[in-house]
Length: 476
Image 1: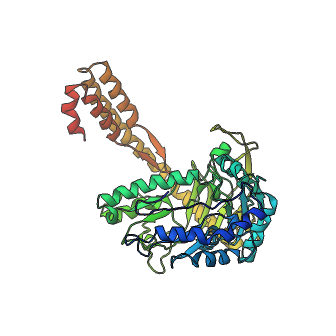
Image 2: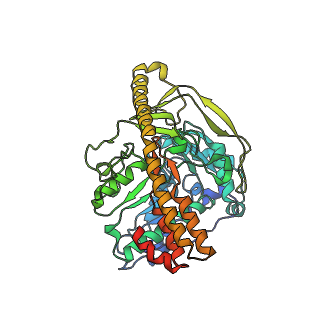
Image 3: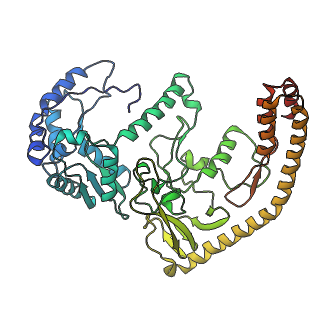
């Protein structure tokens, strides 16, 4: 999980293989000695001052109640030769504050007496702990042998819609397996950029195209505290984390809370590389002012429109999101296991307005309380539907143009195919079919391919047929 320029050195602290308040409390008195051992090993001119020592036991760093972690930090620093120290309980608190959590749920492998200590500690730190759930495992080795699916299951048991986040406890709990794989994979990409001198010349975007596919159960994850998941227009289906990195261009450590979407990436990158946008209208807008952290930058969109096929199901403008009556799929219990999906039922939503600043889970319909907002968003939606109707009417000319291009491509490909073997005919035949594929865009417009797909297929045919090779260069 570490980048190549970070080293980890560790030492163990003896503990009886029983995870309860009594045994965890004994760890505190043993901390100065291992802190000293680590400090000796970290005294290196190479490492310099960029070092830290952490007590990596979550329960052990809070089991004594509020302030227990501070006492342990003092104990370690008494023997750490000036190297700063921390604990996992301290780090978790700081991480949750950085992420803006106020209301949390806690899930882990522990027994109830340990879980109660977690609740007391984080409530004393200013968090509202809505729920705590544990697997009731007291054996240390059994905790280490748990499956990642068990971490998921207990997290789902603890989750409630009004929580800002889920804190999954215990550094011996295998909840980090997937995160470790993602960290390693991303690290390989970033490392390659750095080794090749491309680090400051490359914009890296880490995001996703949709929320978790909830019918797959343990293979899906959870979007909580957001509502629903993939395949719906609720935020659990379409609101994603997005991390962007470009040294020297995007300020490190900044957070943008304006709304943006993946449709905005194309026009933004086009601007950055000096490329022209298509002649026809597109939905995305340039969001470079948001990405680059320009002071006071706002979303360039008055609203975002959420379509399922050609049906406009929701519209969002700033803090407000208006759902129009529509049907959606909701997963049934038990959900899928082992990579196989479970079943879903069809549900319906009424006309509903949600304030996403105060109700991130889209649980409280305030349409009756905000009639002016409903009217404004409805007018925006009506205008968008009207634009789509005009696009649908004009799409006939797109289809005719694409069809003509396909017919010309097919005709030329057929003439070449007469001089090729049967394998080449297979490639060229697919060229004609691929060329005519069209897909509806989110706004209802049609994106029609030209002969590009056919060129690709004929290029493959050219490796079989010399005559195709001679002609394919002219087609591109």
